[in-house]
Length: 60
Image (cartoon, helix red, strand yellow):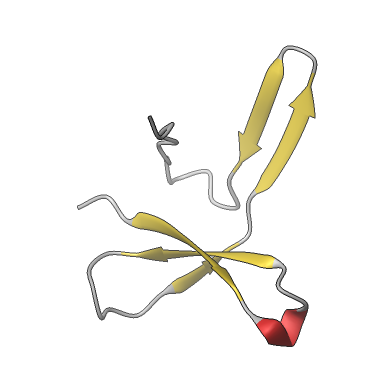
């Protein structure tokens, strides 16, 4: 099963977005710290784990 990426904003850290991965509702989460780099031609997404692949979907 591919984990879901969840964004959460909390008051204690100034509403800074935190990313978590979850596998199913009610399960434990893992804090996820990716890096995004923007350029004129697009963007790059760097994961903290080279063994994991994440799919980014655009909402329509």
